[in-house]
Length: 487
Ligand code: NAD
Image (cartoon, protein in one colour):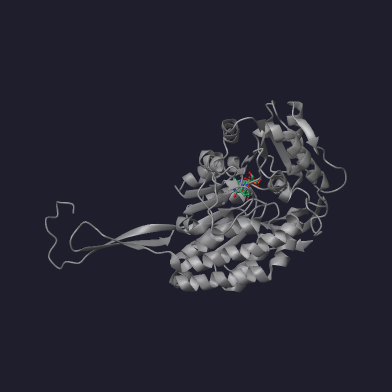
């Protein structure tokens, strides 16, 4: 068993308890992990608070902070392959994707390294004589970051990068499932030379470690990625201290295909949207909304592509779909597919768990036309596509918006004016037109409704980790006039 530690106040520690991690490709335990409970959470938050106000970090210039983040970015790039292999081993996400994604994580850190000394305050043209007024932008405080098991290095980078640029200190709670890569990443934080306590990385279970962290009185902001039900716990807990929150949650994202689209290209994008990462992607385009007169043609194309997908060992570069991250996830998906079929959905392909070891589930397509299927409403977080068809553009838009979520969406058409109408009409934080599943550090990312609030990526994310302070300076040496009048 490979042994991991977590990182508090610049030290690598064994944790209050230990628990095992399971390799999803074999179902066997492979790593021994530290478990943080209330005591270690408290230690980590105190270290972050100390570093925020009293340490070398608070004395650094923004440019020096940026240089440290650049160093971190270089270390991530240099260690990308090792981190990718760990993430693949611990979560089952295929090596093809983890190696590309982690190399790109380095670019996220580079982007925020550059932003560190571009966060500016302002001078206000105040409406009073003899008065100078400025807005200072200061770090929001100690930030708690809680991430889910899929893409932990990426989902933490979109929080750690902007928070460091803003000068915050933080406690990152890795998921209890697949935390090894994030614990290993702590070594790079250490090697980059961040002062002790600036970034603390722990792991533990949601109900103990996550809850203790989100309700800690010294936490000013909780940045969360995960499911809506957990988000409700986070909001309730953080409300104790009136801490602010940013919530990146799940989705049931519509993928609309019009008859005039390039169907081959749309089918490739649909495969990327629902089968890549074994469907364990918050932006999964899990509801295909296709124009009725091309439905059969498009489904035939998709079925062919789905059945040609190479399912296999996640560490094999040839594999396109690996196992799901946990047995819990495999059981949830199988149960939801069964319920959907019982409700009348027609299985176009897949749908059944294979025998053998590991948490595999095949690419699955459910034709839900005319059926009130639970698969159209609930997030699978797995490789399952639900299909409905439409006649008119208005019908397509109504189907797209028929969800409480609002994270991502895709529109495939060659009609420019229609594309513009849908861009405006779709209620989701991201609209991809004739493309899908593209992200960048430069582009804000986030959802509406049950998909959460707050944005990650872009300058706005760094500003969200700041708070403003208004400074008033009177420039007159005359005595203060009438003290009973507010001026
Ligand atoms: P989850 O909500 O079960 O867990 C996420 C994290 O919250 C874990 O670290 C967990 O330990 C912690 N947690 C659980 N209970 C807690 C509590 N009471 N208090 C504090 N923390 C607690 O999510 P998951 O199953 O790990 O991940 C899947 C979900 O994440 C899906 O809904 C998916 O769509 C969503 N997701 C969203 C995005 C996005 O950017 N919008 C990205 C990836 C995943």
